[in-house]
Image (cartoon, rainbow, N blue to C red):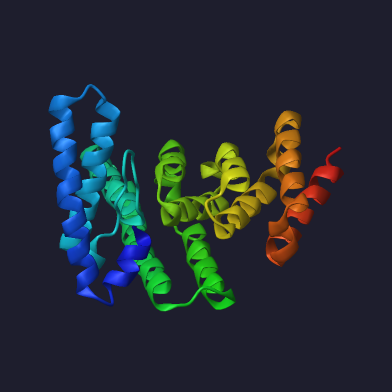
Length: 252
């Protein structure tokens, strides 16, 4: 779907094709609801068809489409933060509400910046550096002490790649928000090298606070990274993994 969105910026015919494909798929899903007991399959058809139709109708205005699950974008994170601000205000904590609104505003700016980078820059070192700057900005946000650590962890677990990266940045910048399971998941199952790298950055910052069992979990994950092809061709990932290994050795 992301590839189709890029093509849609260049030719409206792709959006028309998405509608042409999506309508019969959605219709088949509706029919399946009534004639089959396979509810999962019917739901999948409905989701896929709806995604294609929505893409065809909205094109590059479509920021987040997910089939069969939750898909949190950076803008969703901002909306949740504004909701927390309203709740704080209702409870009479105007200072917390002000801080949370500032975080929400900054998250919306980060969403715009992330989208601009992804749409205007070719993949490579320059784009990676620009993305790193976005994550660094997330780590420097003031007011994050008012965020719920569990909510930030949910943003990582249930988010799109950009939301997962921003969640990692928030954790890097505020020890109160850090989640070892999120760092480990990013290292072991990251959706891209960028996420894996920032999972390593977060883990590196947490080494001194980990129990022996968790340090061993981290060691196994980092060792696997170092033995893989990614570390051989990605110097920042290799160096960060080596840094973690040295820190773990020092804790023995």
